[in-house]
Amino acid sequence: MTAIIRPTLAELEVGRLYDEMDRLDAGIVAAVQQRTELARRIAEARVVAGSPRVTHADDIDVIRRYTSELGGSGTAMAMSLLRLR
Image (cartoon, rainbow, N blue to C red; front, side, top):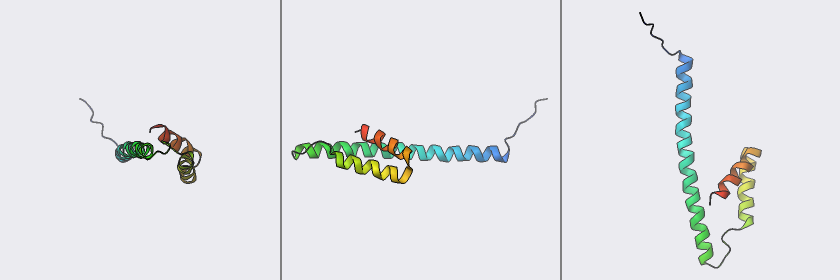
């Protein structure tokens, strides 16, 4: 006879939490893609206007904002986002 193994309530909760995290990750990826497209359009518009494609002041503002909100990991995240453009 084969025993039926049922997940515990804790295992079900962990699975539910992972599902929620997966949904958040999908939203984060979509937001990063949207941000990357906006950065590309801004750079294009700046070049058409005769300005540099990017400004270091704007980059520093992004880095400061992420670092302020997320600490050292925020710095790394901001740098990654800035490289995606």
